[in-house]
Length: 136
View (cartoon, one colour):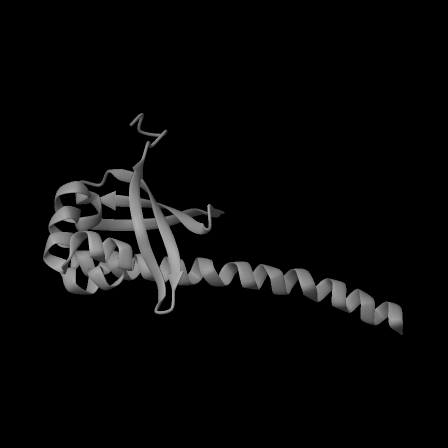
């Protein structure tokens, strides 16, 4: 009887760990997706709410933030399909790689730095990655 219980315990522990690891991925993807939708709707105020307190402090208000995204990240400002790729923990933060299609149908790779705050997951920075498929 003890062996059966031990076996059942061993079989359920990995599943619980896998579910725990998926929880941040789902929450992180939801925040990024929501912000991308906000940009397509030209709702800089809602998009600004997904930024970390540090990012909000740097830009000061939603209008400045929206202008920066429009000028520096046009593929985010007007985005099409998205695909969530690797998610990894580095230096105490989660980094989510996202493939985003721009308004001209060109694909870009971006890396979102995500942090968990008392108010939930927030975007703490985005960088454009070289796209090996496009030779960028």
